[in-house]
Image 1 (cartoon, rainbow, N blue to C red):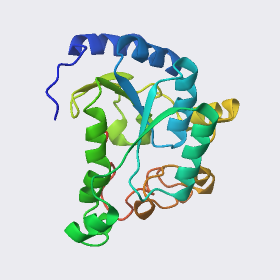
Image 2 (image 1 turned 90 degrees about the vertical axis):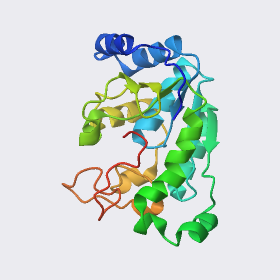
Image 3 (image 1 turned 90 degrees about the horizontal axis):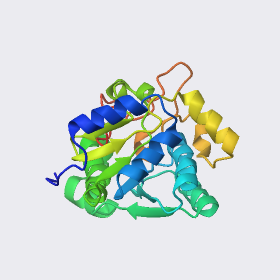
Image 4 (image 1 turned 30 degrees about the vertical axis):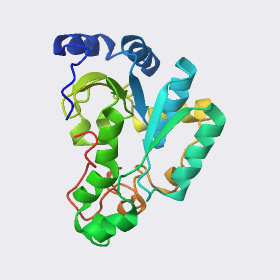
Length: 233
């Protein structure tokens, strides 16, 4: 974990969070870019994140946006990535795992995502995220409070103690309906799997469709007690 000095004190973060918790996502994004130069948005190309890409490029066209390519994303995810690039000419940076799928299988056995999903996420998502964040002073995410109990207390500005960074969550208070209202109003490209009962989309092996009435994140790591990949917890 980085030992670099945070650019804002805990008191300053708490004050900003209290001041901006009722503001629009655009106002929170402007605060983020005006407060910290060395900042980037972590994009998964889910509904929340494509909405934020649209907002971000309208505020700061050259903003750094990075994504984690686990090598096992859905084809539909790569398609929306390409559509985002085409529409916004976004400054998109890819981070890949240090191990190929073949090297992972050689070292840890086949189907690690089934035998040790936490270990697989650590290799294919958490370690690349660590590399990405190690170059930054702050990051922007698309997490929302109502996505999961682990996110229920997310601030719009907070100290990320795991990665020793300032973290901005501009749509923390938005609902799923708010996200889609924005996507439709602004003609934002989105992953078509969302139209096929995939509210939360991760890697192919660990994501399934969600039945009516199920929790929106029930399709992630089904059959395990795992609810987070380790990026926000």
